[in-house]
Image 1 (cartoon, rainbow, N blue to C red):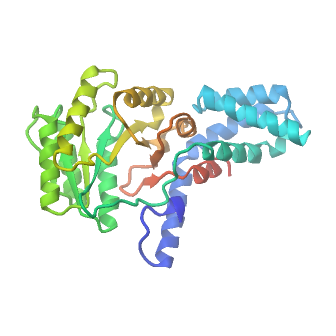
Image 2: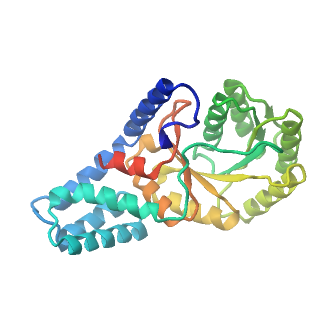
Length: 327
């Protein structure tokens, strides 16, 4: 079923309806990026009837300015050049479909999985997700939407407010807990974040919860204190659940373009993140950043945020994303 259903649940009719709704959300969410990319590619090939060096130069500029990233753009251009050399003559009318196919093939070469559904083992301990990212990227909102999806699938979820640096962060997570119907473990502002994480896991085990999602402070990603704090939280959680955290999810704001690349690099150096969520794609023409990040980092993009509604967080499917952009 792939990308179109967050969890495998419900009748075949219900699943088809969910797939259709999710596709509509995807198309709407990337519409600004699609319009921008198509416009730039159209200008790159105007007046040309075949793909030549000038078209490739213009295409390279179009992809870079669409926030695909220089490294990924050069790899795409190399693939297009190889395709042109192989096929001898490629006209500009075919360029769109060739681009789509080559980008999909490029991303599939990475040794990172697509997430067709969330398959988690909760037989012995709850599945623990520690969420990291700078302030303002939509971190707490992503936690709330994730909690909603897990709850909808029948999972029991507990949230931990380990971002004790700001009172507003605790209040925001508390509000999401009420909205979704999940207990939130919290302490007062300024408390030790590791202590909150410890209490959250103990409470989750006592409640026989399936999933624990821990919010963390969104301090600047170049601060050495962040690495020390995240390491302490991880070590303390292992005292309760030896495998915790099962997932360290970095949330990035897609609308920041190249800054999202830099944040990913810094957090990758600071802690062992193993999943990415890219948010706010509906409000930007910089959605090409998803292609670049998916290609360049050995950390899979797991979720994409496509709107403000509670169900506008979707599992990322590389092929569905690229084909929707170039459909």
